[in-house]
Amino acid sequence: MPPRSNPTARQQRLGAELRKLREGAGLSTEQAAALLDTKRTVITSTEAGRHGVSAERVRRLAFRYECTDQALVDALVAMCGDRTSGWWEEYRDILPATFLDIAELEWHAQGLRVSTMTHMPGQFQTEAYARTLFQAAIPPLPAEEFEARVAHRVKRHQAIDRPGAPAYELIIHEAALRIEVGGRRVLRDQLGHLMTAADRDNVTIQAIPFSAGVFPGSGQATLYALGQVPPLDTVQLDRATAGEFLYSAAHLCKYRLQLDEMQRIALSPSATLDLMHTISQSL
View (tube, rainbow, N blue to C red):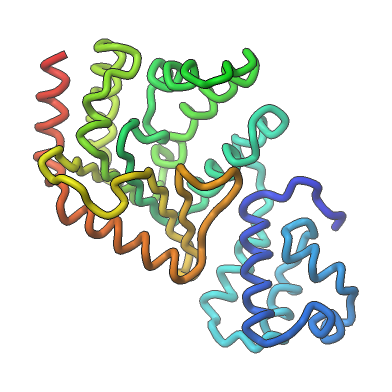
């Protein structure tokens, strides 16, 4: 398969995991290439996600790297075998790669844990709400990209609304529920949209009230996507640079603990619905 000039987030993650297996085995790229009777550039391109890799090659690499975690190997094989194009691909030549990578990450996740402090979650923003947010960009976005960003943002709900969708846990600060993005009417409609989403069996929403004070992770929004096996979990932060995803064991542990603490201090789902209803009624 020829190299791809624009590897997807899934291909990049597969390559990164293969690199971790190689490094865990104490092998250089030259040594790995010799074991597999291939060129060093094939190894480096595969690990960068630029070179396609078959299921057979993944299993062969795992064997040569002496990986004994069969569940992880099976999950990596599943990643290389899924080459279907998602809805986000239609935006590939219009939007920054990060937008596409996040949509792809959400689509393939086994579960999603999200925290947001000042804005409604991207997965459930209404068109009017998203439009207002992107209108605030400095400098102003080109017209085509502006419309594409709005449409892409609204379509992200598909990862949560489709049949067999993963569990979705949202922790949202009271500030995000009260900031009048787009004015009272837009916020009221947005709150109604979020309350409707909370009725889904796979969606759990908890609000952190102002009275909770400061807490770990209070300064950023977090997207934690569960992989097929725990080592394949991924974290994406609002403050992260474009295209950056975090998946080291230390990062995964840190953000799991942060989200656990947020859920501990947050209101219950029923109390959260009451709060959203109260805010909506006041608008």
